[in-house]
Image 1: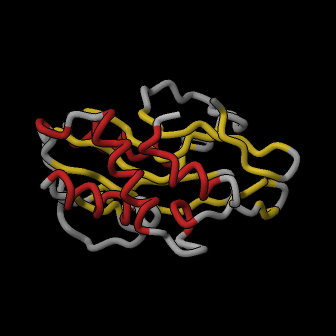
Image 2: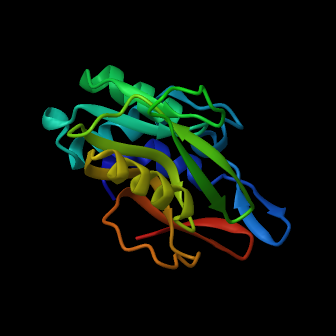
Length: 186
């Protein structure tokens, strides 16, 4: 295991699992802000992404609300790349794009603003589970004419089906829920 990621790995092993209508949902500071997000864990996330992604040619980080925000904030501060949040409410700007998102446990609308044709973007989020949210945001970025440099997620669930999702993703860890516990897949 990459020693840079040890604080993240250590914290993941203690993540509780809750049932959300038949969906085994793990609760962790990185993915939920509950319990607290420890600074060394967030530093490990930033270091892990910096080792794996070249941010030199990136114009904008894009983070879906809510749990991509703290990762984009930390990455922005470490790389000097600005970020925009894909919001859960409309602002009514002329170029705003509505995005319908469905997850393993719900659905809603998101709204993209502040991205222009030709922008080189990295989409940053906490977890890739079913892939529906990330796919919807990627499609909206492509509709704007942005160039998707990378999709960066802290965790990729490998125990969830991802229908019609075939994008390349940079994940710090692959995880799965086995017998009521979160497991890092080596």
